[in-house]
Image 1: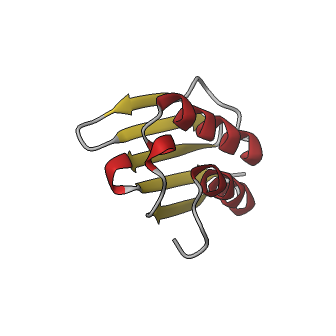
Image 2: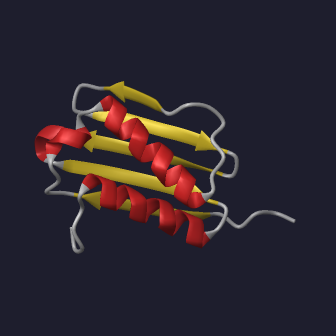
Length: 105
């Protein structure tokens, strides 16, 4: 039976830059979100600095979580894919809380 995948793509702004530019904090956000989703990681989170910010990702058995941050702008784009809509939503909620996003951001 094929899995039905759900995707949550969200962009937040007006975030505090501290977490957005901290590689360890971004990795911790990914691990927390994966735990909330029930997503078994297929390896450790990968966090890399780019010219405009950071990219962080975690690949799991049945989904993934990717963050693109722009600390200087206080912005973060999140992409969560999971095998069920509820799992994707839980992961997105954890990320929003950990990054300090407010409703309506």
